[in-house]
Length: 118
Image (cartoon, one colour):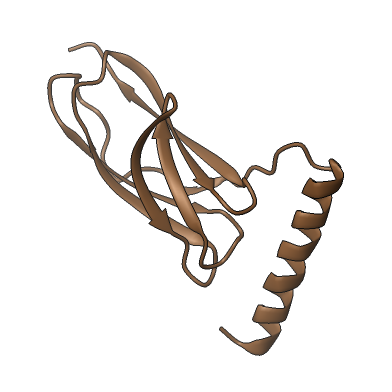
């Protein structure tokens, strides 16, 4: 990463951390970078999801959860990006939410996927 990008990233993290500590920002939410490359077919068939998130914080630990249950962990890269390649099996028919939470500053993003009726 170039020096200017490092300075900008450092400044952004400092501003966000300050805002969070002062209560100025209740929750920071980043949008998912793209949709999955495959879609769920039914609750009985395993579906592999490929989801990328940008959580704005470089080289930070991330926890992926569904309904509060940890399904995976990861680390953002130098740009704040993290990728989840995960196979959904055994989920009830309906919509589910994967939440990626950057654990240092609490920045999170969500991705929704569905398991349709057969």
